[in-house]
Length: 77
Image (cartoon, rainbow, N blue to C red; front, side, top):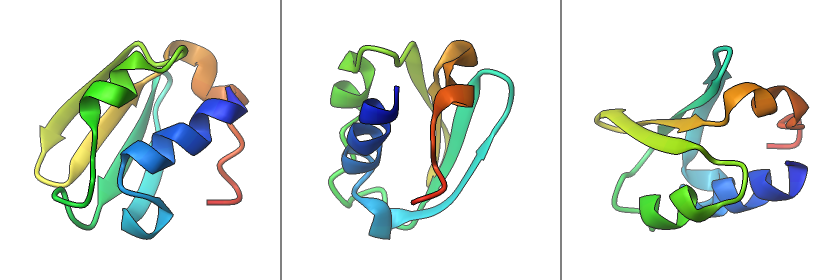
């Protein structure tokens, strides 16, 4: 899963485009600065451990990982 976190960041426009990351039991909730900054939802959905992507509001994305988010090391973001 840690390999996919790098790809998730890339497809959300890079670390410089991410304002905040939080989580619930099954999702990473991400706030981005600019939705036009190379965000690729289709590629996010193709990642092995990603079960889905929800674009809930402007600048807000939820990456559905099931309980796999708990294995992610996001401390270096």
